[in-house]
Image 1 (cartoon, one colour):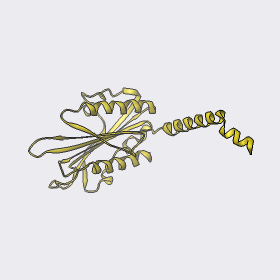
Image 2 (tube, rainbow, N blue to C red):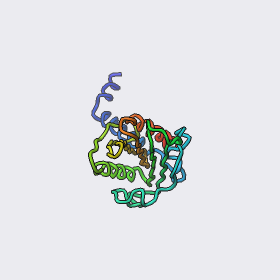
Image 3 (cartoon, rainbow, N blue to C red):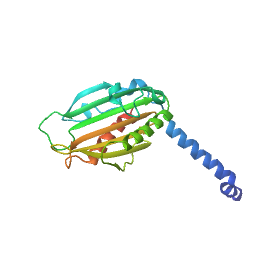
Image 4 (cartoon, helix red, strand yellow):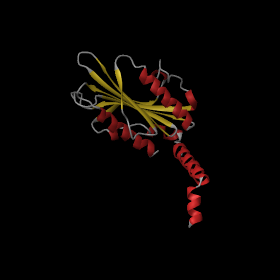
Length: 200
């Protein structure tokens, strides 16, 4: 018993334990790589959003990222991307999200996804006009969110959330009238999409 206690308190055991934690963390982060064949399943669908209809969906094209730090379609070992845009089937609706964009990108490795997530951070920091970062937790391995408004006849509020899960990056953009759409709306949709990614 005394020998066991000495071993548990020894620097050698503490080093062994620290190594185990590092290896376990790495294993959890690398996980099973999401296959490219699953790409179209990593975004929201009309079934996820009753009362909404898609007006654009399919593989991402150059225009979807044109003029941004994520414009290079082959960046960081990227293997492809998918996108869907939805709006309420009832065109008279004014409360809640009015436009939702859900997108996902897959990379050969989680390192590629980490680099793309860093590019999202840069992209969000360069948004024109006044914008502020919002706290995001419990979403993927890394997550960031921003909100901003677009003035006009009636001010529009936007929430953009991006995150990384294994070798994928994903994002949600939610648009609605200021005061009629919330961060909680955007977070609920992001978590719904994350469930799709986790199940891929």
